[in-house]
Length: 167
Image (tube, rainbow, N blue to C red; front, side, top):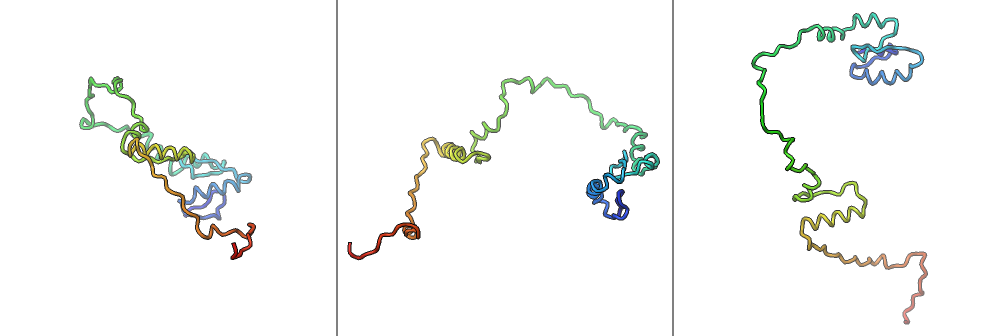
C-alpha cells in the first residue's frame, strides 16, 4: 500500500497511484505545489525536499548503474561478415507497385461496401454481383407482396361508404 503525496490520509494500491494522482492534482492544485522526480514520475516531492530526494531516490540507482556500467562486449560468435549483393530491389522499375484495391477487384474476394451512402452501396453490390457472376448477370426482380387483408381495411379516419346489400 502507498500513500498519496497530496494527502497522506489517502491510501491505495501501488497500481492505482497514477490514476489517483491525476484526481488529487486537480483538487489540490492551488494548495500543494509538488515537483516530479526525474527518476520516477510517480514520485511527487515538495520543493524544499526535492534536492535531497534526487540524491537519495531509490530509482536513481538504476540510472546511475546504467550510466557507469561498461558497454556490452560483442564476442566473435555474434559478429557477422558484411554480405555483399549485386541485387537491388529498389532499382527494379518493371514491377508495378502493389495496390490492394486493384488486387481485390481482380481476385475472387468478397468485399464489403463500408462507409458508403445507400445509393453508392447498392451500386457497389450490383457491381460486385456482376464481377462474381459475370457481366450478363441479371438479378430476378421480386414481385411486390400483396397487401394483407388488414391493410385493405379503411383506417378510422377515412371516409367509409355505407354498407348495403343492394348494389
